[in-house]
Image (cartoon, rainbow, N blue to C red; front, top):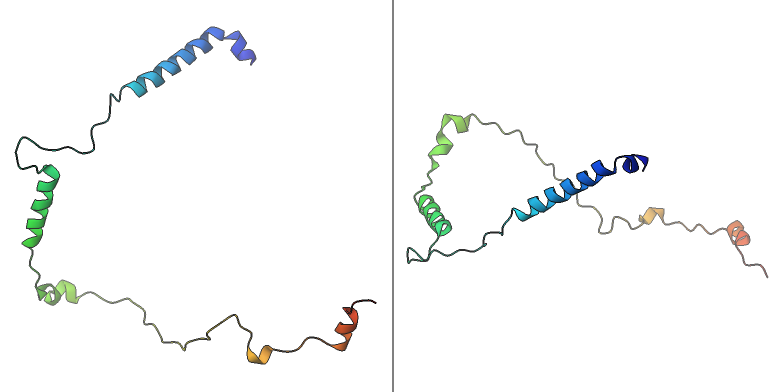
Length: 119
C-alpha cells in the first residue's frame, strides 16, 4: 500500500487506461450477426449451405464402389498385426459369492466365550 500512496497519480491513470481498454474492447462488437439468414434474392429460398450440401450429395452419388482395390498390390502387401483371442471358459454367475469349499463355520467355543454377553 505504500507504493499506491506515493504514486497516486500513476495508479489513477493506470486504472483509467484499464477501464478505457475494457470499454473499448467490449463496445467494438457492435452486435452479433443473425444465426439464421434467408436468401430472398434468388427466389428459390436455398442458401449457400443448402447448395453446398446438394453439391456434396451429387458428388457422392457419382462414386462407384468396385472390388478392384482388393486386388491391387498395395492392398495385398498389407499385413495383419492383430492378436488372436483365445476362447476362455465362462466364469461363475456371481464372482463375489464365496466358493463352496471356503464356507467354514468360524464360531468356536472360545469365540463364543469371548463375545458372549455378560450377565
